[in-house]
Image (cartoon, rainbow, N blue to C red; front, side, top):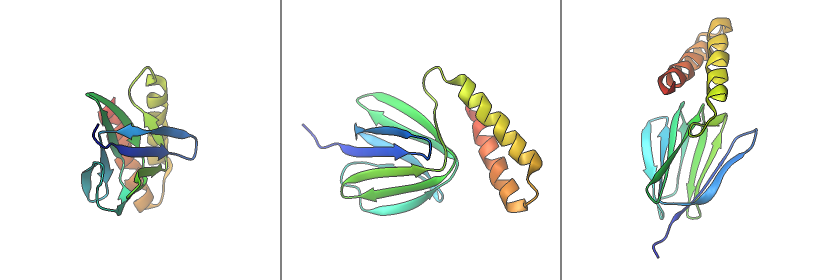
Length: 128
């Protein structure tokens, strides 16, 4: 049996994922990158985007608002500021996230934070 990547993803709300998988694609701040078993150690800031978890022909998707990805010899850990499972019947949670992002865009007065909120909103609207 071939080696597999140990992957964990957590957010402040909950532990979202923990398993051995084939590959994970991560939305890094400098571009998307894939992580396989025995990947070189590295750390990356996450941008708002989609984490793709591929395992045995099945792909699971998660929206992450930001955070960090840490690749070590033991595997990949994602520490997400906010994360939402996109596969399944959780359309209400996704719609709530869009509504919350729109509210942040409208109420934010700091230009940098407003731009960050707009980036999150664009990704969420694309998902819908």
